[in-house]
Image 1 (cartoon, rainbow, N blue to C red):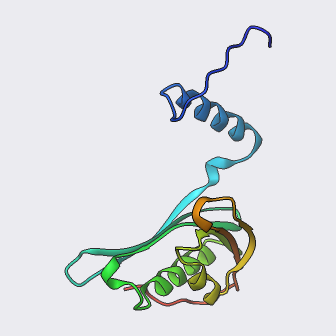
Image 2 (cartoon, rainbow, N blue to C red; image 1 turned 45 degrees about the vertical axis):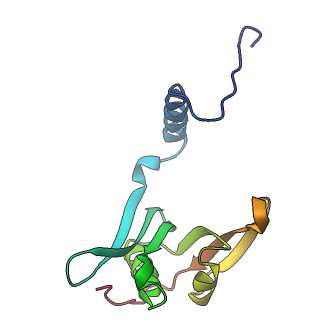
Length: 149
């Protein structure tokens, strides 16, 4: 296209929303992305305060764990393990056969490895020696992780 002008930006300008919507429209024509569903497992303390959560989405038999967070003072007590287990069970109950995730080396790759996740590949082009792990776990049908609370 000879009569097109390109612009470059260090942040997303308002016009970027048109690009995002355009991709969504194209994707919807190619695949049933309207079937993607969010999943969440949350942990609350006795006073009703949110102390942790596992958030993600599922599509078909695949599930993505996008966020795992535990309140600072509640870490290293097994809550992250329980949240991941509950998230996996929820995914399994919804027909998923695998969970995948991304985590940096300063986050929780050791936890995920201990829970049966395998690093599929590493991305090591971040600053300061930071490495991103792309991980996968195949789910065993019917296994019950038990309650979170």
